[in-house]
Image (cartoon, rainbow, N blue to C red; front, top):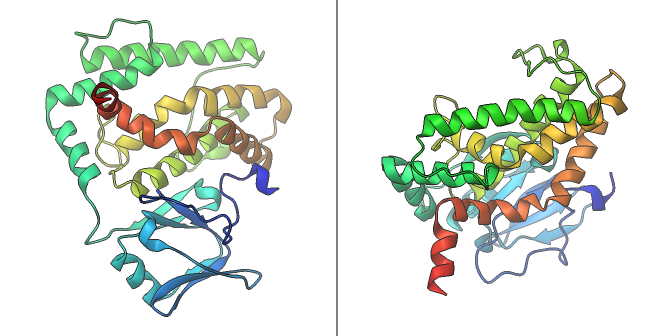
Length: 291
């Protein structure tokens, strides 16, 4: 796929971020991280060498075909730069290395909000307000807002089925049996997973926890599922129904992946995530009031 269609582009000396503060993350694939005079260098598949300014990075996202030396990990940790292992373009999230010296300000703020019942409800209300901009949500309980959301999503599925003239029998997914679902459900499952991967990488890179949610609970990644609901309508649901007729009954992971990438790029998702988190935490509003 051409670089213009990638979520992340090849790292070169010219493409390294020029920042005054820490840059959220840098994605790398098909190369090797090594040490050169106590600094980290990236050697790509063509043998090009690029010094990496890890002191200005929150996280390195290591994609397919990457290797890293023990000394490179130690140097990244010393610079407060975490390391995450991800799938291509971070569409799948596998694991993350946590730093004993990491900045925990964002995590502490998340914990403070989640541990206070009233503040946690306010965060949830801001999330729901994104989907119900004209509804009066003040005074409603979390359960009431979740019920509204469930009704909205079911209606949205039916609306998209009629819009794209696609048969729809409801959301169906059996873990481990992906192929048993119809094409629309397969696209939904695949793009949801890809969205979770992107959000996991971003959340880790910014120092938040995917495990501390405000709406979802009892699942491995409640905060990721909370955030994903902000973006699913355009990135996953509309895409699934619009692709169904084109796929003509046969799931094609390459077409689905390419179409999903285009939507993520068009939505400027990677830029939006950090600002959206601050806004739902009430920090965006606070900054505007101070100005």
